Length: 128
Length: 467
Image (cartoon, rainbow over all chains, first blue to last red; front, side, top):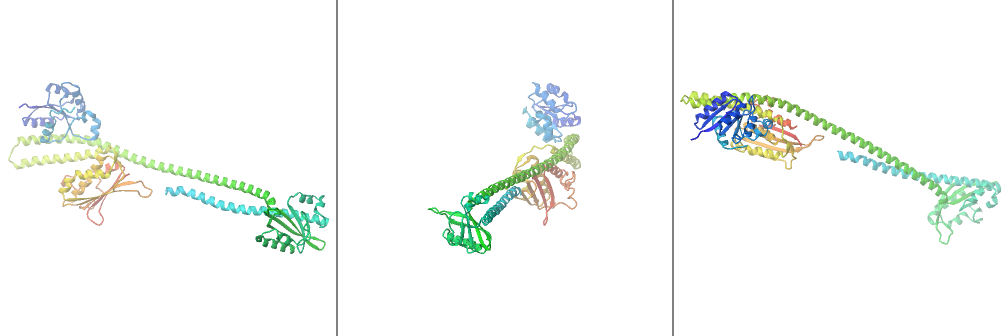
């Protein structure tokens, strides 16, 4: 059985470490972590994931910018992106614009069961 | 109130015109009388002068013969004037126009009048016999083939020739005397009436102008007052929005900084649960407790985000009844599960109000949820909607939500809108529900009041919005 490739782009190293461990412990996923937003596009191009979990607020580059770069890149534009965010408010959606608004969200904190459910729901679902 | 104010000036004008008309008529009558009196007096003076002239030339002299006298000539110049001189028995001694000498005045004239005029004629003749001076207006028949009634003015006065007393009577068609007088009177009355009319037109115009000015001023004042209220409300809302904007930014920052560690804890627990597959119940319990604590902390942060997200409203005209029904529908399972009966007393055709329907739904969900929490053993929730407009106040739409729960604990009434004040710690309350409700309502320019029911257990929540 082919493992699904998940790329996590999030600046919280400890969070990404545990998510990687937990997802990989299920045996269903191969996870790669990228803690810099600005490296997100390169990581996606190199790893060719089946789904990208993308943090919204990162110090060097916003999740919405990373999503825009992915959309511009031919080899990445069809990869489903799921935003991970600690803040979900209408204001935030307005401010981030349609790039973020058009993608599904997963609110932090989330337990493993719900995270997997969110991943499976959006896998192969190219929303943009 | 406004209609009454509008009608009053017209009523006043109508009254003024009615009174003016009445006085104008009175004036007309008084004026006419004065003019006629004056004419009679002049006629009488003429007659007396004539008499003096006659006296000077002896009463037997034909008046036509005394044409050297200006006065006599004056009389001669007057058409349709009859001058008679009678003795104290009213027997005609001289007649200027026709020869009636020797005839009795009463007998002569009796044949020329209709019955109703008899009394006047008799009274005049009696006065002449008594040597009195006076006037009379009597209708005579003309001497034509087809006689007309000729209104005649008669002036009479005693004259003396030696020791004998006579009376001179000057008769003239009333119209000849009165016409110029009446014409003058009419002209004067017309002019007076015109002046009076113009005066009232002017007065009414000034009144209307003043009233218009006053109304304009009043309208301007009301508009200014409304604008001031609007401005104050907007200012309050802006301050509130700004405050909420700051709270929003602050809570976003807090949420980000808190939720990320919570996420690490949560994922850490997931990892430990997988790795520490132990039969030690304490370990399992510890992990479960940590997981629950993370849940509680997350709940507070979510509440804070909800609380802070009020800064922006998407307001559209909405039916409050529909929003309440939607809220009840969303809570149906919870209400049924908790054995809570809902009574809806919604006013039909309630005015639409400009509100953010999602936010207002959030308000009602919170209020109803509080009621549910206050009735663990079941109970009633009575929801009433109505529109009201107290005198001199704007129209408002009111929502009243009553429950039969435990009510507000003593001493808690003042604090229920304070952030993080909660009486539901044990049930996961974070004390941000009612502050958020209040914020949302105030952002809409509305008001909320929560109190214990009078004469029964439970709480009454009254929310009001501008209609």
